[in-house]
Length: 329
Ligand SMILES: Nc1ncnc2c1ncn2[C@@H]1O[C@H](COP(=O)(O)OP(=O)(O)OP(=O)(O)O)[C@@H](O)[C@H]1O
Ligand SMILES: [Mg+2]
Image 1 (cartoon, protein in one colour):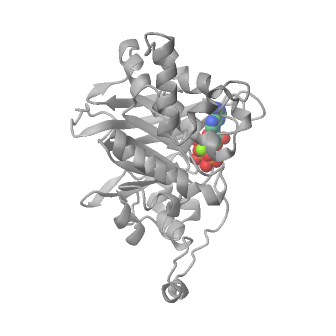
Image 2 (cartoon, rainbow, N blue to C red):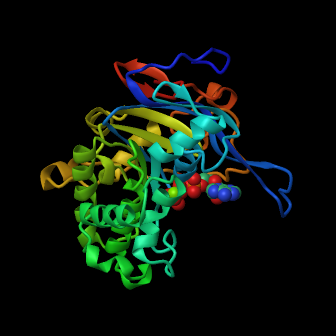
């Protein structure tokens, strides 16, 4: 879809994002008055009940996509449609903020250590006036704590008394408090010990089935989202490079960037692993303040042609449900 076309929402999708942009003003230094294009023209859809994985290297704009589509940051441009309704005016935002929540990347900085678990979990209940009285509020807090495997007796303790895994459970309970339908899980396990990462991921999967949730699941690493995502989207420097079913994307990556990401995912079978050829990209990721012309990946791409320096490729469907932004595929 070009930016000029009028978008018609499709009721098959819970969330539809069109041409989302988030440009941050640079307020100091010699780049003053330029704009950092953290997210630049990103479009995608998420079906009811599915998990869309969003992967890419640090700084490529994953968190900014999540925060902007939730309207925690006002988009510089673009449209967000939730259940067939465009988000933007006050009435739509009020309902959307209740039904669309976020689990944050770092449970150490995202929870106020001086607040009790009860007050953290009840924040959305209070903001959206969801409990009629004190008893209802207390019951709901207990219910939410047991939903995420926390002992409800600990509701009066402070966040700093809990381990990383427990803190992330508190963050998940808070996200669930307002009965959301959609949750952005922003690298919910990357700050946790490897030994408890699987527990938290399994719990998120169980909660999804139990509460019929839809997820945008953000991760650095394809191997983290491969098993839990129905489809996976790959970002590079604020742009979307490829989007396909999780199996399709991991078995038949097409974009040269995705191919390089997949080449570094370890294969458990030693025989297959020996055949694996690791593709190490040359150079560094360019600064988002000084983006290459045309395709953002071209400076590191072995297939780059003259056209790539001139025109930024749009996402194109190369087979059913498999989209790639590349001139040379
Ligand atoms: N509030 C902000 N103000 C200015 N620049 C920002 C802001 N938030 C993010 N950025 C910049 O936008 C770009 C994208 O950042 P973002 O945090 O979205 O990346 P990310 O993919 O989530 O990275 P990570 O994997 O490290 O979490 C980066 O260059 C970052 O420095
Ligand atoms: Mg991030």
